[in-house]
Length: 52
Image (cartoon, rainbow, N blue to C red; front, top):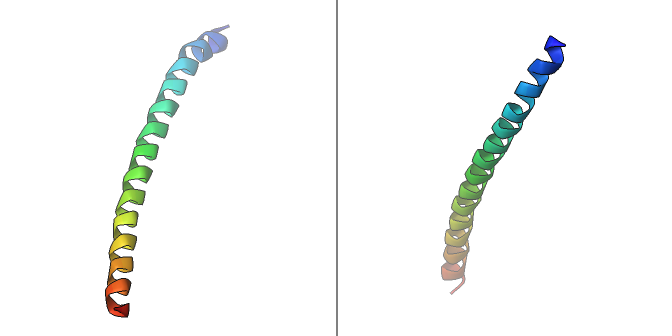
């Protein structure tokens, strides 16, 4: 019975921890993709200026 009581306590904590980690990862990935977009834009601008 102790095992099930422990699991009942841990399950919502683990769910919350998983959700928090997911949000942190999502925010980091979106920031990284924004930086990558800036780099790509600058490269495209450089290529356009070279063509002209």
